Image (cartoon, rainbow, N blue to C red):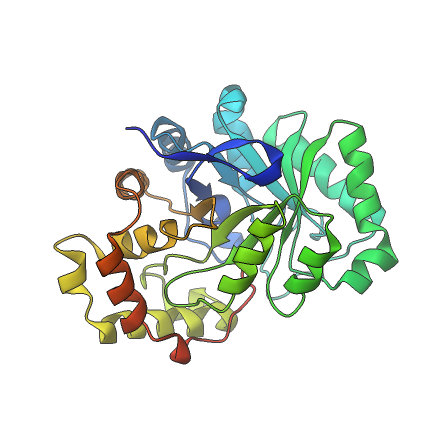
Length: 314
């Protein structure tokens, strides 16, 4: 399988346009589904075997970093690794009761050191600030200065922001971040203009939240900020009646190829705990962008006037 690749903005990193979001490996302590060591090993190696070479994770994604270190650190040269900072240290509990994110120099460094230990590597290719703090907070805490220091020491290669409205325009204008991870899907195009602005500034752009998670978990297993928007997404997909556009393909393939059709987007991260889903996503990404007429029809059916309010969930 040959996945399309592209250069991630000014970083020069060559990444597959389909990336893997490791939040799905977080485990039940972080409101995820149970996942065994065998399942984690299989899915992560399937990710790499499929041609996906971009993996995004975070210190507060439960067991995800430990799984990456345990099962694919010996293949480290095969993938671009992105993690985050500002997170509560050893944040493996319920996010609904976790302490707040802190963007001090000390916590930024501690997050990176913890991530490197967990993932058994000597560097992160991208370190992103998590949860989209304001520029005022970043300046008050010297967050960016510490990220620069970590670059100078070789612990990270490039800086990034996992951002969203209302602070994302200020993040882009700051000019300090090499990569932006932002929400974008045919169901939520509220950040579309900012996606173009980030790319125009020379930054790498990665979409998250592009594919709605299956409604398989018990409702009580997900916190309200995730449960309600997820249910809304599935209701809107059902109401849109996309079967004729999908032409026999799964709806999720249609959504993924819609996102990959955006000219200013370099990559999209999609998570799964199932190797079969990983292979199916890779096969869909291999097909590339949608035909223009299908793209336009899908965009029109999922009327942006009825988009859900964007949320910060990754």
